[in-house]
Amino acid sequence: MIKCKVLIGILALSFLLACSSKQTSEFQGKTVEYSTWFDEEKSDELEPYRKILSEKLEDSNESAQALEDPQKYIEYLSDLDASGKKTSVEVKLKNFIAKNPNEKKAVFLLGVHYMRNKRKELANYLFKSIEKDPKFVWKSLLFNNLGMLSLQEKERDKAMSYFEKAIATEPTIAAPRVNLGALYLQSRSYSDALPFFKRALELDGGFEDAALGLGTCLESQGKFDEAHRIYSQFAESHPNSLAVLYNDATILGKHLGKKEEASELMLRYIQRGGKDSAKAHEMIEGWR
Image 1 (tube, rainbow, N blue to C red):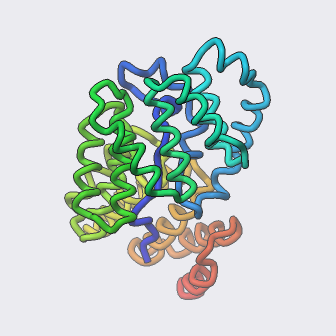
Image 2 (image 1 turned 180 degrees about the vertical axis):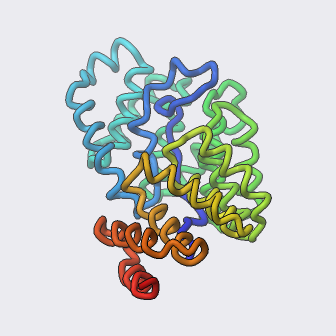
Image 3 (image 1 turned 45 degrees about the vertical axis):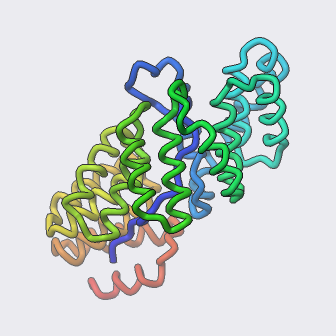
C-alpha cells in the first residue's frame, strides 16, 4: 500500500518561507513553514515548530512593533496565529486593518485565520477581495489557498486552475505544485504528476508530501530503485517522516527483495508511533 496524501492542506504565509526570488530579504526563516498546515493530522509534527514560535513570541514587544513597524507587527500576528495558541488574533488583525486599510497582507492573514478555523465563507470573501489587486505581492499563496477552498467545495477544475495560477506567480513556492501533482495522482496521471513533485522537492527539501508524491509516481511506473532512493535520502535527513519510512519499507520488501532491511525500517515505523502498526506487523511477519 502506498502511503501518500492525495490532497494536502497547506500554506498560509509567504514572508516566513525560504524563497530564492528577489523577495528573499522579506522572508524570515523556516519555522512557520510547517505551522501553516490546515491538516489536523499534522498536529503532532507541528509541536516542535510551535514551541519555537512560542519562545519567539515571548521575546516580542508587541506594542513597539505595532507603533514602529507595521510589517514587523504583521509578522508578529502571523506567528501568533500559527503558534496554535488560543488568543485574540482575529481582534488584533481587525484592529490593525481598521487602522491600515491598505495593508492587504493583513487582510490575507485574517483570511488564513478564518480558513484555519473552518470559517470558509469568510476566508473566501477576504481572499476574493484581494484576488484582482495587481499590487498584492503574495499572489501564489493567495491562489493556492483559493485552490484549497475550491477543493473543499469539490470544484476540482476550479482548484486546478488556481493551483496553475499559483505556480505561474510569485513568490515561487512548493505547495501548489504538490497540490496540483496530488490531483494528477488522484486521476493516475503519474507522468503528469511527477514533474510537479520533483520541482516541489527542489524548492523545499524538507517537504514530506513532495517526497511522497515523487516516490509514488516512480513506484507507479515500476521505477522501484529510483523511488527507494528518493525515500531513503529523505528519511536520512528527516528520520521522523513516518510515511516515507513505511513506503520505503514496502518497496524494499515487496519489490526489491530486501526483506531484512524492510523489516528493520517497518519496525522503526512501528516504534515511532506509525498509525498503521497492525498492517506493518502483518507485513513484517510475511517477510520472515
